[in-house]
Image (cartoon, rainbow, N blue to C red; front, side):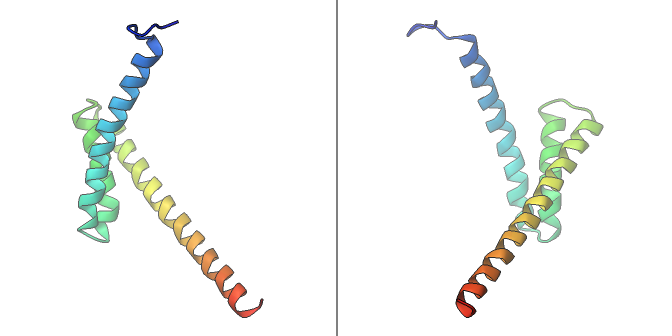
Length: 102
């Protein structure tokens, strides 16, 4: 059991995970924010360039894994947009049913 002055192995692992997540997440988010200024293409190219560039520069990956990471971020962005549109449409339908039929 870790005492007040001792660090357990778990805390070292969690510190590393949090540090890497914050570092990579900042760069991916930066790519996404920059992409917003170049709509509509920037919405897809921002996460792609941000994720692939971060993997290539900081994680020292080759072009193929970095591209896969970038494409994955684009797929996640598009899936999130589609899901948000479906939920928004459902909210409008529920509101219309409540307004007109109940």
